[in-house]
Amino acid sequence: MDIFHCHILNIKRKYTKLLFMKKTILIIALTFSFNVLIGQNIPQLENYEFESVESYKTEEDKVLMCANYLFNNPVNIDELNRLISIQYIMKWMEGTPDYTFDLGEKSMELTKGKFDLLGLYMAAMSKVVIENKGEKLDSDEIYNRAEGILVNYCSNSDNKLKPSKKIKKILKSRKG
Image (cartoon, rainbow, N blue to C red; front, side, top):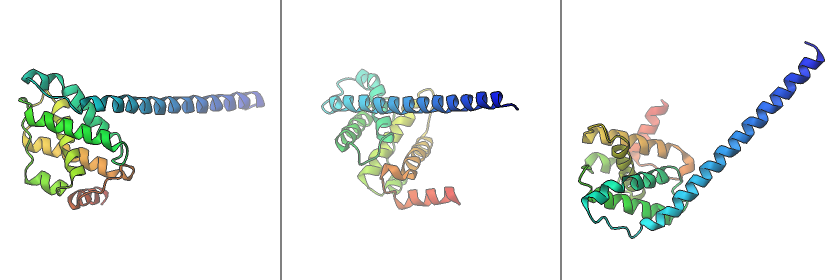
């Protein structure tokens, strides 16, 4: 290969790196903007009251938005918005006529009564049923999928959430 072709290859590599960096910066900026926009909408939900059967259905997008907000941010960031999100999800779960949620022995063992884990588990259950509206999910299927979401969240140390013994056991079994 002559010097001219080597120079062209170097230019292409630099251009590719520059393009990659621009795309990465754009993705980071969009992600940050999305989280800020969601975070700004959450305080509006604090005093929301579900007034009719239809209101539970129309609010499903906001419930999913809250669940996604919780799972996209560490527990030590914006604690007030996290609390409002969990309360909103709990109100929705309590009254929605379309779904039944089982907070039985398995979920209590998974979360060990820790509020942060239990709130996220409930958000995960809501996320599962809303994202899978067309499927008829039984309690075990909802539990398994919600458990997976919670365990994945706990597996990321950046989320600053101490896992329960059961979650630690699941994480250990994944590694070995």
